[in-house]
Image 1 (cartoon, helix red, strand yellow):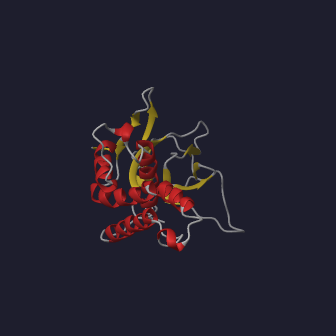
Image 2: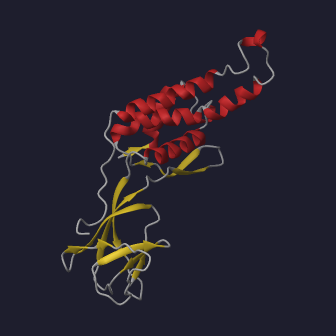
Image 3: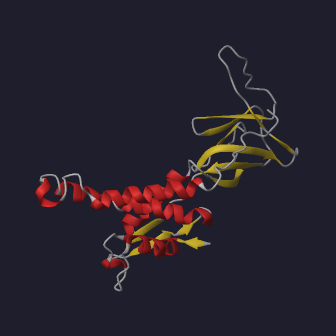
Length: 227
């Protein structure tokens, strides 16, 4: 399993920021790098989502369950006892809905999974999920102590996401440079719009788009196939 320390080694290279004294002397602080990586993972979700599986915890009324907090969309709901998958229900204005039916069907609303039948048997939910954030605390010495440092995005996406993270990390100093240049005149150094860090951030974004385009977008299977 990849950890964020391994990703950070690449970021040190991309940012040309790897002092011998370690993270406390970084020009681009480690918390900023982590924030950039977490944001890059969110962007990457438009290309590829995490595939996850969990058991469905049915409520006492046996007609609904809380959806996982990291769920983006449902792939399948499988009933091991009856050896079948559930179909996704859809409703139209003026249509019929029977709250006491016994169909193997579901729909979602209000953060809950709702069933078209009374469910007493265990169900398995297979779904597309967000990528978990890297989380951390800062100790008394000002160093990062990881709470979760696991990187779950596929390895083939690491370099592309490192480029996107670099673009995000360069954003704050690019803003600072833009403010410093606000009142410059052309004779000072170029034009007031000249901002090498902004240009580099755009170059890093270009690298992300180029690299991620080499990989096919995830094919997502929705529903149980028997709708």
